[in-house]
Length: 485
Image (cartoon, rainbow, N blue to C red):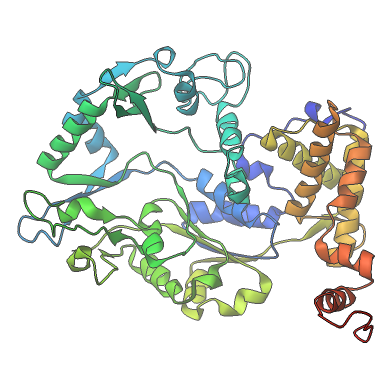
């Protein structure tokens, strides 16, 4: 601990798999799963890194090798066909729509566009190739800065821990608007097409491309350069299994939209050649059966799911969905996982009970230092911490391990809670105008970041006493009537 004065001096790993602390067994099995094409079930309480493990697993995969297209079926327009095109075939086959638009460099487009597409460094403003993750001018991680900007958006509070992982690559396409010479609003699309080139499409080019696509009578369902990590929420069958959009004109040959252009991929299809991650797996209920079918068959049809929609008569068979499955749940919900699905994981994969603590020794204490530094770097809105502040956080880690898991001489791995302490301490430092998170900021954060249950116990003696007080405060008795006390 005496080797650094502040966390700014601590070097953290660049790869996500090496940023995971305290879960050595799980990390080892994740590596096995990638190499041997196995599925995984992660079990443990919230906030110990289940999402991060799944994301790290996807980072170890090779890029997708094929793209999936939907083509028109002249024999039966309501039964579009699947076309699989390899990377080599895709690169060799000249797409006529690529002839449209204007080719520009990163210095010729708006600054924000060049930053989000991965060309311009947000820190120093220097431009470089989009595939250069590290800025050659200042040494900053360009991809991490893009992720930090996203998390600082209006909806950052809704983003879960899985998004805290750095993106695999910057955006490939950005949609914007501008006012043209006639004074009306039109759409602009910026596309990253090479390591040093950007294609700009104006409204006229966009309309022409749509016409050319109609002539081709095919649509890219899963692009070649897609993400290898898909987080499925199971909010609806459509989100998980795909759908066919409604056409009010019933696919009329002149004014309607052909069926093949209305097919929407589900999460199980988007995860083809990647990782399908389902957190809180038991919450999917009967939808778990569909995941089991997809895992067994490695293909799943896309059909219209609204019986009142024109898409109800459309069906695309044999849509590929060959993915590695990672399910996660808390211990108490383990019994609610569909037995055949769990059997499938056990028969071709691993069930992993994640650790909640790790031994309190020098090596593991420095792992906590690494975690604190990562949290500060990822947040980007709080300053670094002094050595004294870090010591207090580590002491809190020991107390949490004893209080929550009844283990002595241990450090907690409930890192989401510990990360909350770090961020609140950082907010106090920012509020006071301090350049560093000091010991006093951490101590105040620990005191103020206690759970509601803990605060109720301190104020009222117990949760039940607090509940009784809350109920009696709503009684409408006669003035002076103290019977409810």
